[in-house]
Figure 1 (tube, rainbow, N blue to C red):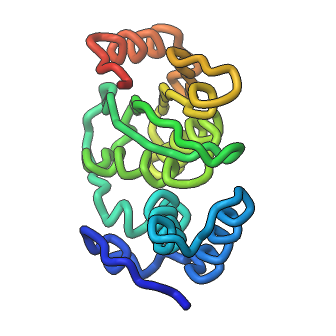
Figure 2: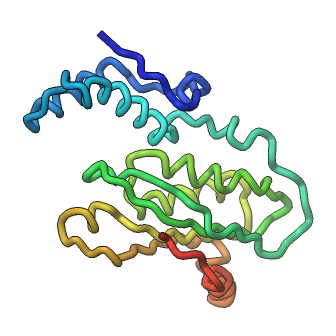
Figure 3: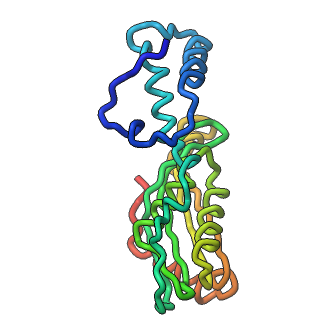
Length: 210
């Protein structure tokens, strides 16, 4: 029997498009608890399968985002032709190898070719790809390629910094290790001065990851 756990917010109710099979997820989580020697029916764990399944619905929401609805017409004709940068975009994702979180900041830039996108949409694009089972390298490339296809700008640059709990909680246990990945398309790949301008901009007073 599925037990409904009251939430502090109505995130699940507000996102009916999420396609998780809740009963199957709850059974799997209960089986995992049993497999590690726990009793899924004890007081502290009785509602855990429900909570965890709902948590994963939110953490993996990016699988069900409609890109058209995400952009929602926020593309505007504009003659501006200088670099546009949105930096220090917080993100949280799940490593597909261990299902542990990695988190950090993304920096995104593009050179408009007659169109610009609403400011809030770039962080939403980052979230769309972060809220999936991911590896940081692929996520970086997906963000860049999506913006390139969406806007057809002269170039797109994405740099992602990440702290990976799979390397801090387990394995090598390197608590201060950070991973940086980049994707440079168009002018940012071809022109060293353009790429350098972007990198200098995002290095000025960058916020710490934690």
